[in-house]
Image 1 (cartoon, rainbow, N blue to C red):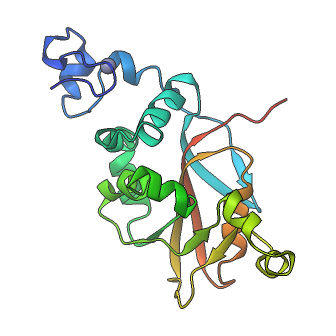
Image 2 (cartoon, rainbow, N blue to C red):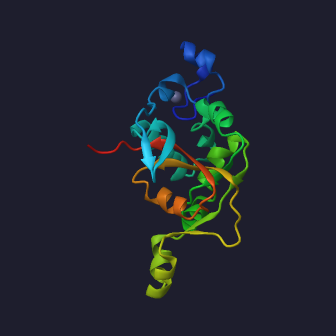
Length: 200
Ligand SMILES: [Zn+2]
């Protein structure tokens, strides 16, 4: 099998890691460039569970996947932590943090849905996100009514036990906007695969 990032043949590698993790779509040299995140991140008084630092290596993989429409890469992001996530959150429904509809249409796929489908868990896409342009097209009054770039889709019923998921957390503003739209009696956990280190 070839590593999905660098293209090297894994069976030709002499690394023990490659031998032990033959199903990992990345080779050891690519995988070890992703660094585990040890810093705690709190959003709206909730702990965000996260795995990786959003470093150069992670960012370039995510960019290639999202912006170069490289769907094959969908498996690399959760591969090493798939079983951990399934065990820890097995009875929850995944709620995807939204990309703007325009972005999803440009890509031709919902990158987050593809990324998390390997968990085999129930999944919902309850939020709508307007792009900057779409927001500009709205009148001032409409914008005030919306208040946010993000809305809950009409008629959506949110399950009681949920796991809100995203690919990277930067300022956390999108995540916060989503959390505020959820019913107060929901049992909410948050998992974001990578985290940008806070400055300072
Ligand atoms: Zn590689």
